[in-house]
Length: 70
Image 1 (tube, rainbow, N blue to C red):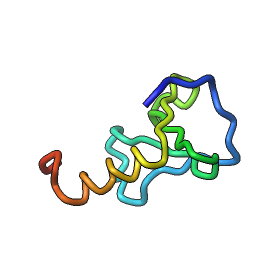
Image 2 (image 1 turned 180 degrees about the vertical axis):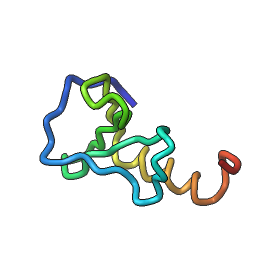
Image 3 (image 1 turned 30 degrees about the vertical axis):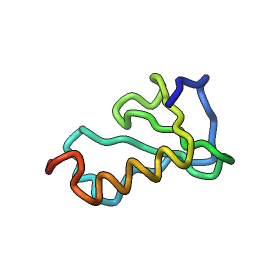
């Protein structure tokens, strides 16, 4: 993970699992080798960028319950 300058991707996506509770992130797929992530409540705020391998590992951990239940 590393901070990046503001990215202007074609579109940011929020998870379809988001229930509007105000604790959502958005991702901007489509950039080679990196996945920008931002807080949906602060679209002009800071962004993080994860390498695609790191992001896929994180998602696998979430799905397997590695981080506990939410």
